[in-house]
Length: 102
Image (cartoon, rainbow, N blue to C red; front, side, top):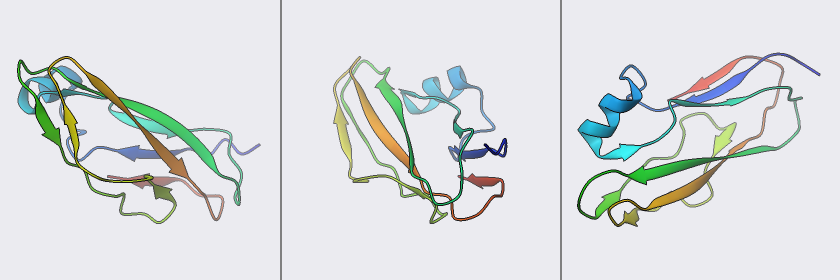
């Protein structure tokens, strides 16, 4: 299997995870890394978004820029304080190459 990686990164990737949580009130992974994939396949990973604020908030996000990454329903998510929501990221590679999205 190919060892080439693919990653979807958040726009605020340059910030440390704890700094992003303080600034935006959401704890989430820095990136999603897909390994050992082959062109033509479909690969799925779930990421967890957690509201770390003391109040409810609406989380808005946008679809990935690259066509090889997708999210099922990029709709706003209402999260109460302390609650988390998982989002599935889908990766459908077309050719063997490193792919990065923000």
